[in-house]
Length: 270
Image (cartoon, rainbow, N blue to C red; front, side, top):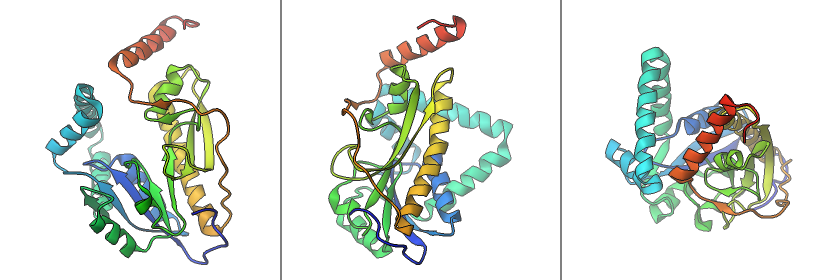
């Protein structure tokens, strides 16, 4: 696994690795971008999940976020209801898109199981792409001859781990970053293929997250094309390694939102 060598002379065959009982809309959009590019062939994907029912979704949130995950799920349901009420056609279109993409995805309980690995080999991908998936093991991410890339919404090596956009804003950083890296056996320690930043000053967490998502799509597609054309030049991460961030606790969230509110009401407040 390393730099791509020379143009393939054909569209690059890619497979997407993800996880969860329901495909995130960001994954759906990413797959659509892959399918729309003339130099890319999306051959399928693997999604690790133990079920796709509403019960499975609730269990997944409880496992990953505890009781707070249920609160977030309720908020998502409310937001989805509001979106349908104000834009039913757009909502139905997104649901149809998600269903179409799901037909190209292999859902399995163990993404590293022998059956999943065999089905991955049968797809004959050139390059693997991670979007919201579990931590991958070498027996999976080394199957594609060109290796596997992953997107990390955070600067590396300063911000590794989970919810790094939140933590960058919590720490009052002037920018938040997104990185396309080669997957290795570490956690957010791979060679950097592309990276970028967006300013955070005067913006909400939601706005920064959306801007990073859009920038991330652009950088990800750019990285895939670089591997296809043989122009990719991955480089080692630079700077001091930061801590491995975890999901914020309720107290962290309350502290952050309180500071955000104070700044809106009292300009200049910290």
